[in-house]
Image (cartoon, rainbow, N blue to C red; front, side, top):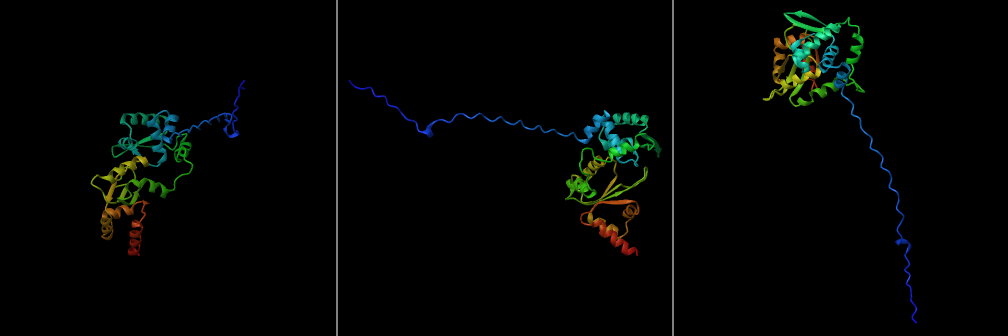
Length: 244
């Protein structure tokens, strides 16, 4: 009688399946909260985009005066909306109006109850950890036209004065790139700007012959905002030597 043999197959330890390990729970991704920009924050606080822009315009330049159509151009809002909010701010005592040369100008009323708090609020960039230096600011503002622009001079004008507030030394392109940049600068600085563009070679020639236009500019209160190559500085040094 044949024995029934049972073949037992031995499994090597390496062939034994390891017990399944529980899957590690995925950590939830941190949700990145987008910080609202300062204009949006102010709009929510004051209840109106136009009002927020007007308050920034006036209290960032508390000593300046503006007339309605200039304000409309600078802040980029509809004239009816601007007029309505100007009336609201005037009724609250935040701004006042005066007439020069048949034009109505608006300025901050320094007797306003919240004058100092508003100056403090709008003098600082909301949500910005560190304020830019003046050089950093102008490096950023001039970046789009750095290849065409050599220097920028800002001239202080009283309301109603004739003349320009911005002298650009550079080369205007057929597409009027510098002119478009001046309009961008109006919005960035929140103030209307009359400007003139003088090519670099023309600037040196005009200064050498004591051109009336440039003499009038440099006789006024002015500030060199951008002059990386020292164009203004070199001509002013020469003028001082000639006047000694």
